[in-house]
Amino acid sequence: MVLINPLEHLKTIASCCLFLIATSSVATAQQQAPQRSTERYGNWAAHCTVNEPLSCYIVHNVTLGENPTPVLNLAVGRPDNNTAGITTLILTLPLGIRLPEGFSLEVGPQLKRQYPFIRCLRTGCQSEIQIDNELLNSFKSQNEGRVVFFDAVKKKIAIPFSLKGFTKAFGRVTNP
Image (tube, rainbow, N blue to C red):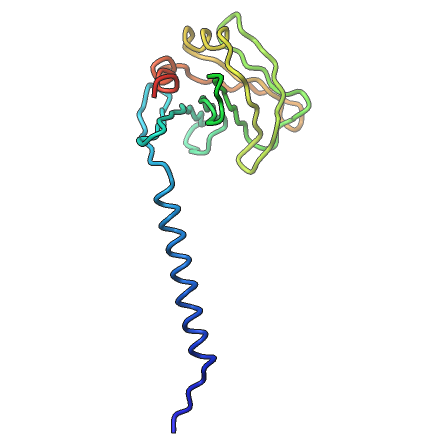
């Protein structure tokens, strides 16, 4: 005589239900994630949604030598909840930098501004900068800028970044 244990059937049914729930939530997440296209403009890349609502942000990653890990990341875009058309630059530097002094953003001979860091995440320390006309015009008219900051032992470090392709890439932010 074979004895059937109802608990074993319950375990099997529960396992099947959990599997179905897990796979359906993955499928739903994949359906809801916006599809993006990427276009290169010089040293800048535009990442744009291909479905409505259309939006783009542009990115420039600065690396040193053969190391693929960025030492500076510049991302420019307009937040989704932004109704005023304000464009924001999110600048990210690696962890291990000195925070109290902030950093300076220098573009061309005229523009030199000091900014604070607002947060540090696993990916690095960040600042959010609203791009005004003076900063935008400097980015468009110059070939290079630099970010100057201090490391943990107060050594001054300057990282140059390219503005090659910025103007065309920025056109994607304002007109996706």
